[in-house]
Amino acid sequence: MTLAPDGVTRATRALALASLIGLIALGLAWELWLAPTGHRTMALKVLPLLMPLAGLWRHRLYTYRWVSLMVWLYCAEGLVRGTSDTGLGRWLAWIEVLLCVLLFAASAWQVRWRLRRAHRAAEGETA
Image 1 (cartoon, rainbow, N blue to C red):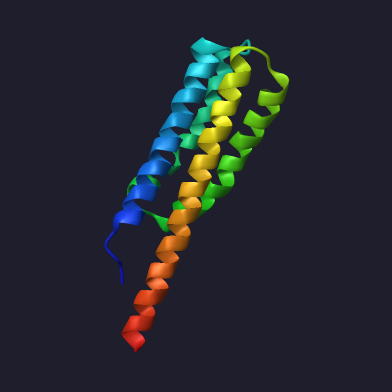
Image 2: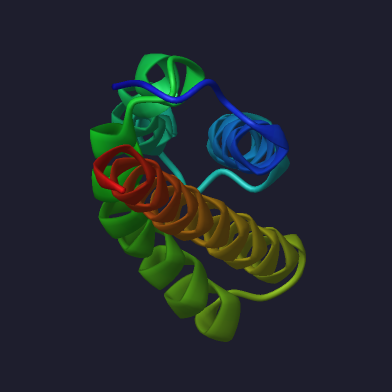
């Protein structure tokens, strides 16, 4: 049984998508224009962030689960660069950390909410 998306499901999906798109845009702008770290090939780090876009858009619960784990790699990068870079790079790193935390929170909330809804729906059917 598939439950129709409710308000919380739509809101957490919107936050997750906005955070993910923000991370992609930030990563590209950072490495290509704002504070490049030498070779522009570092912009390739955003490629893994493109993979979950379709799954998040389609409410795929499995995608929310694995993206909540993958995002910590980007958060670690932001923490390292936020504490070691200077100037604009430091600010960009802290923005990356913020976007990562938002993406994780939205993904975790989505998973917990949908599993709770499914459990309650299953209990209602058996009662």
